[in-house]
Length: 78
Image (cartoon, rainbow, N blue to C red; front, side, top):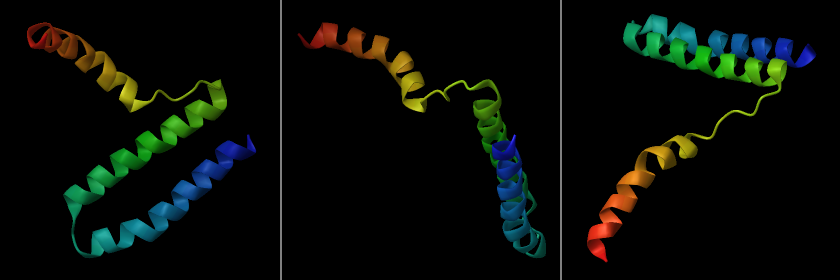
């Protein structure tokens, strides 16, 4: 429970540091993207600590996508 509270406190500090300059400069799109990415990061972190599931590696997804393509191309290069 303390780890989850720590994650939210760190996210609050990040928001406190990063959001005022974005609002001051009227960077609405950047603020939107920043908020989405921070929410995804906090969500993944909390999910990891609550359900104790490993966070998947993005490289695994790329391997799943490009492995058949690699196999197909290697057929023609032999």
